Amino acid sequence: MRRAALAVACLLAFLALPPAGPAAAATQQVMMQDYAFSPAALTVRAGDTVTWMQHDQAPHDVVTTSAPVAFRSPQLSAGQSWSYTFRQPGTYQYYCSVHPDMRASVTVLPAPTTAAPKPSAPRTTPPRTTATTTSAAPAAAGPAVTPTATPPATSSAAAVPAPQPVQQASAATPPSLNPMLLVAGLVTGVAVLCLLLLGSRRA
Image (cartoon, rainbow, N blue to C red; front, side):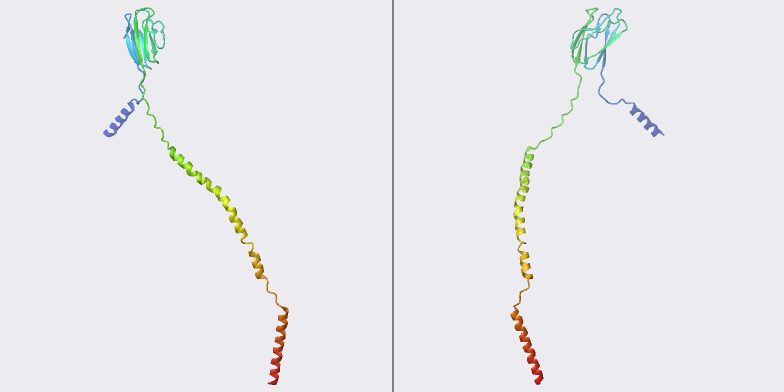
């Protein structure tokens, strides 16, 4: 039980922490009392707000005499206040137009900025791109040469089978026989038969 209670307490404490983030703009106060501005010199940063609080019975106001951006407040009675947010750095001199002896100043400094690291520029390699374009030129020229050499090969191959049908036709034709040789063969055969017949009768 004690461990569970301790874990719950730690979780609640963690949730109660404010989230981390950029610093919020500050608010400064200047008192208008005893016919004077207090403090008479104030230093703030751009984005900060200054509030003038009126505590005198006589009316007062805030009017710039020399400033990057001029501003003027309405006349303030006792218990009233007026606020102004400084956006532009510089020195703001002001006074009360009702009581000119009441003078003061506000110095506005530039707001703090965190410069982000600049990304490194990618490295370029122009020699490699040149080499690739140069080596690609012969590859492109190769196919252009091949078609020119192909037609002679096909023409010579087509010329070779042309005489083959002539040779096959000449080999297929049977040789012609002389009719005189046939007659001589027949006569010789008849004579041999006659001799055989005569020899058989004598026996």
